[in-house]
Length: 412
Image (cartoon, rainbow, N blue to C red; front, side, top):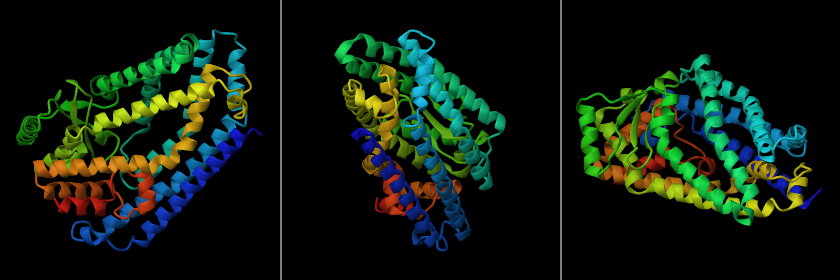
């Protein structure tokens, strides 16, 4: 067995073992604090609500260990088990153009992977979310969303993959730089098009009705110098009772979006504070910084791929006998997460820093106590645990733990 194959197996075992250990720590920490509401929340959240959040989080973590092991097994089947080799040789037997063959292999794998993941998606939505009273998705909506997502993936993904494979085949040693430029342009286009053209395929967006709430929002936007394409309400209640708010897009094509469930659970003061937090991300350029990090890491990744695809051992050590551009792309996509999981705390740290900065901005634009009230309501409505294991949280949570975040806001 090639040394790279051994290294891959070592990192796969390490990542699985670490994830299972973190999950066990998280479950034990939640269980140890299940019977007492943290002091900072004792007057705002009842013991029953706190225990519901603990049980809901525990159920998701317990369940999450199964797809973790299942995905690892499927990864081994794709590689050492000969799954990719079988797909590749089958597609090659049709003697099509190399780019068409690559597209056939890539989309075949994506389709099979989606089918293999389907039982877990169904269980998560219609068993766990249903059990705790959050699910409002019907089977019809679930499968309609899945079909729309698949068609959208074909419409947007097929041209992109074709261009990438053509660049890999035709542009020589610097293909990865040209591919990086194309990918960056495509990503910016998707970010621009998402609020107007993509998101409405899945949800209904209605302009917020004129009234005191919209007036306060417009005043806040004017104070912050934020120009948007409008303020919209999304029919999130069709799928879940969870609430949220966000803005998307860039340039003149920006939208501010409130879930209808959020409007029902927060008053105007709290909504203004939540929006001020989201605007804090805009004013502190967190979106731009995040995109810049993604663009740079993609450039580095493509550079590594350009080196790996020249090495026969890269293919052979992962169960593929015939080197090709499309197989290099597939193998790289499969193995990279195995090696990068250990960097998760760094990304979480960056994200949490952004959340603290956005909270500080919100406290400057509105009363910090309103944002605290809003967060408490969101923790309650979404059954978010107030007592995550700190180490688990450092790997998985993009937002600071509830007690830490509330304490930070209370000092503003």
